[in-house]
Every structure is written in structure tokens, then in C-alpha cells.
Image (cartoon, rainbow, N blue to C red; front, top):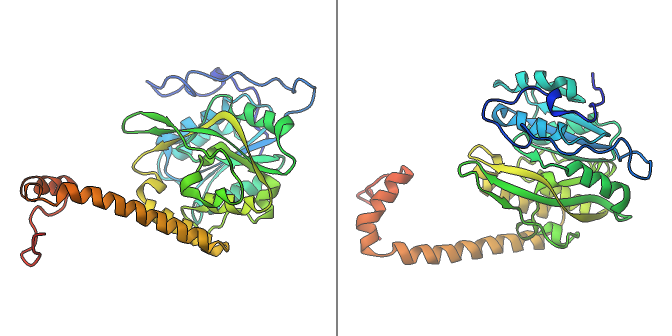
Length: 328
């Protein structure tokens, strides 16, 4: 049964973090919001939904980053896709602090998010937070303040700033964000992309445009931004809201080509063929530029005789050309 998530969860209320886990959100919490805003009004109702499948090694950090926000008017739903790793055990440990959770098979990420969004009851502004991403300290306070007093009259979404973290190196960098988001720039994903979990949107608008397109596996967020941009405005706030994680199993990292293909499909499907053609042209121009640079390095006898076999071994490719394949 779904229930309201408790507000003002303290660090000591949650399970002990695993050994060696330090800092936010393991051993440090953020400053909680007061029960009411300074003018005496209630904080706007927000909701987070988290889709997950066999992401147990990241899931607990995601959960804690939401629960330790100290936001007093929050729903938090988790939709697990029937994981076979430690995910269900983690969800059972954190169940007392979740609005609701379920572990059952689904038809993929978009379907899981739509199902979780359907369970949201009170929230005005929502987002989904993948189970390998986290909210940053004070994220919900910043969104709540914008929703209560700072949003434009026609706003259907707000975009904050975000961070990328490389799992292999531990390096963290700022995510790109366009200085101007409108229905035209939202269609140019490659130039004006922003971090998905750093975007909160109107639940009413989400439902008006029909939710996520469940036929999409990679570009469902881009497709949603395009449709939301047709009915309202995207506001910007100068606050760090979320951090995503780049790791080998991340879906868009291992299938960037398929993701870009879906982006072009979305543009054609939504009636913007000129933007799709421009995206393809930009990709070709970049490929052609990189190919020219690469050819300057590889198109010589020294590379072919000495370095090419080493590169092929590193990539797991055959070290010798077939007899019927002439050397370039």
C-alpha cells in the first residue's frame, strides 16, 4: 500500500551505510526545509519516481539521496523490473521511508516510469531519477522554491544544473545546459542537451501529452521535452540538482548510436524532418572531420607495420589481415 514518505528523515534513521562509503548521501545529510515556507504556506508537492532493474550496486545511493533531502511534501515511488540481484533486499530495508515500491516485470524503462507516474497522487512537479543517478544536496528545496514563487506563468518544466561522474576515474564535470530553452532549441538535442534528472516537469502536462512513448528505449526523455515544449515554457534555475554516472553498463553509454537513431526518429515522427536532417548532417560532418585527423596518423607504412598489430590486439581484432584483403 502506498503511504506518504516521512519528512525530515535524519541520517540516523536510515540503515547504516556500507563500509567505506563516506560523504553525501552516506554520512552527510542536507539542511532540512522547515515544515512551512517563510510566508506560512505549504511547500509545493513534489514526486520522484525511480525505475530500476538489476542496479543493486547503485540503488541504495539513489534512495538515500532522495530521502535525505529533508523536503516535507514529497512522494517517492520505486518501480523495480523484477531484479534478480540485491535490489529487492535493498528496497525492503528502505521500505518504511518510501511512498511505495513494487518489483515486477515490465516492458522496459519507459513503461516502468509511466506505471510509477500513474501512482503519484498529490504532486504538482515530478521527475524520474534512474537508479544509477543521485539528487544533490538541497535539490528539492531549490525546486520547491521555484515552484512556489519563481516560475513563469506558462512553465511546464524547470531545468537546473547537473554533474557527470565517470565511474572509472572518479572525475566529476559539469553537464552542459543551453542558456535558452524553447521549442526550437529543445529539438536540437546534441547542441542543447541538459541532464535529465535535473529537469522537473508538471505532472499535469506530462499526462496531457500522453506520458512517455513506450516504443522508445533511449530517447524517451528527448521525445518528452519536444512534446512539452509545444505546450509550455522551460524555466532555468541556477542550482545544482542532480548527478548522473557514466559506467560501462549505462544504457546510453553502450548504445549511443541507437540513441542518436531514435532522436532522428522522434524528430521525423513529431513533424520536424528539417531538424532530423540537420542532426544527421552534423553527425556526418563530425565523422568526416575525425576521419581526416585519424587518416593523417594511420595512413603511413610505419603505423601499418608496427602500431596497427598492437592496436588490433588491444581491441581484440585479428592482428593480421586476411590474405584476400589487400593492405592499404
